[in-house]
Length: 224
Image (cartoon, rainbow, N blue to C red):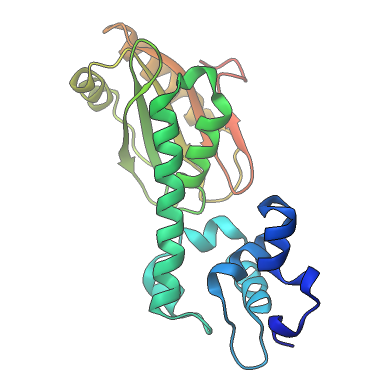
């Protein structure tokens, strides 16, 4: 049944207007952007199928244009809309971080990094370079790896910290497996980076590991 024939209180757009965006499921929110499905499938049905096939919202929105456009019910226009939404969300969170003292809002940092890293098919190691008030100076992807991991070189990290005249840094990387539990290598490289950066008086505030659903802080685990 087409969404226009649903009871008004169950239609995603009307539900959002009456109850707010938080009342909608991932599929309902996605359906608002898709607008239409295809023969025999409503936009909500299409959204549910896409979420199931990709394994969730993160992997779906992190997919490249070719992969998205190959899905039945999607075309270049819808793919472009979805990618634009992701980019807008990332820019909004980034602007918020630039205005705030980052270390006093760890939830905002974690949310930003989840948006950026979750669903990546390869391991990506990034850094948030901060000033003396822990405000964001720059967000850089430093290293990219294969499905198994990324090689991290402390010397290069030190060079980037000096370039930005950073006072502190927060590291983050994703686990393409979806499991956010830090490995022994994650802990060891964090210690190496901490030691290298201490020589130039740059503090390592945290190292976050981003999985499919969870984000683990090595600082909370006592490894920073």
